[in-house]
Picture 1 (cartoon, rainbow, N blue to C red):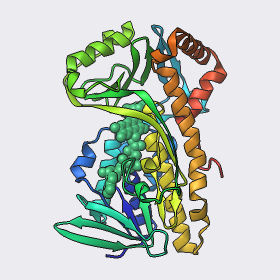
Picture 2: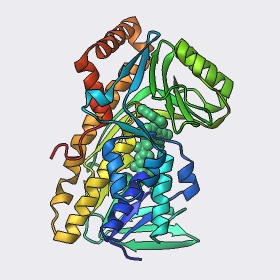
Picture 3: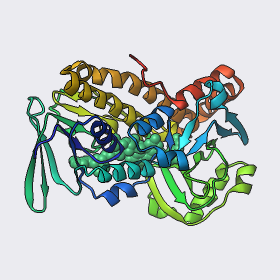
Picture 4: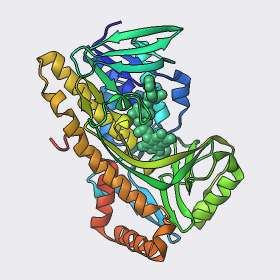
Length: 394
Ligand code: FAS
Ligand code: PHB
């Protein structure tokens, strides 16, 4: 098989790249190791920045998002029993975010790809990448007992943190920066009405909690838990009881509980791989970087990587220019490190770090107090949360 761009991974990065390339008339094949149902079954991100919303519109798949997505102009920060609203819309001159689950984004992208009759190879085994240091890279995979090879001009590594592309880069060619947090997020999805019309980020002495949502009838909640916790040890009742203990009285009164339809524990890390280009192979999304989900940046960063990468490929084929390709990594990394900083800072502010001792809690209290009582402090949170403009760093 031959194609112009071989995309490894059919998560949001790979699917969005495929869609943007298709709209530009560039042929791409996606190779995914899991089934489509498995990919859809992963419950992940929930908040889209305006830049991401615009990219989904550009990809031609924004219709359901605008019909079903929830536009949010602010969120609450709850600490020491008091709630403080960060009025993002006012503080950023009119910007909002949209609550629309990653699962729905992935479904919309999969539907569009299928409707266009584009090739996605699911359940591909032993995927490997070759020759990306030449101008004839190749991808190999096993399917139905046979080994297949794809000849291409470029390989897009959209295969997530545990993917094969970054792992195939020769030692010494990539620098990795990593910080692992001493806790995880226990997440629950439930068919229950959200506890509040906006998100609530909680810093309690028992730990962080987040009250998010997917619709007026579907809620997403998270609790900070020790890394040693196992999801099997958390009954639904135990989850709801702990969430109540971390909420304020108003939250406890309004919380509607019900059976979990998904429950999982995700580890938290900050991670960046530099550079993001290796000859004719490019990394995008979680294949190149991970943020702790506190700042709701993971999916949004993936989308802007893909916008920059698709633009580089379009420029190569339309103008025989390699300018976009040559600047791809540097352009992405400027944005990525800004998001990494905010995600690390917001995680450090909102989570319980007993190892930092009593003074750690007092310093957190002082910073929280500053942010909610300072226009400048609140604006700093708001402008980072709504995200950077697409042309940032150019
Ligand atoms: P993905 O990991 O989504 O997709 C990579 C794809 O590549 C997968 O389908 C995988 O099966 C495939 N793949 C891997 N290896 C392969 C191989 N060798 N061959 C072929 N295919 C291969 N972000 C937020 O903003 N908010 C959140 O709350 C949030 N929660 C998260 C929870 C978890 C458990 C995880 C892991 C991430 C979370 N994220 C969150 C971040 C997440 O949303 C990512 O940013 C987003 O999935 C990035 O999309 P991709 O880059 O496509 O990577
Ligand atoms: C979610 O709804 O899954 C979500 C929202 C905001 C975050 C992280 C996760 O910061």
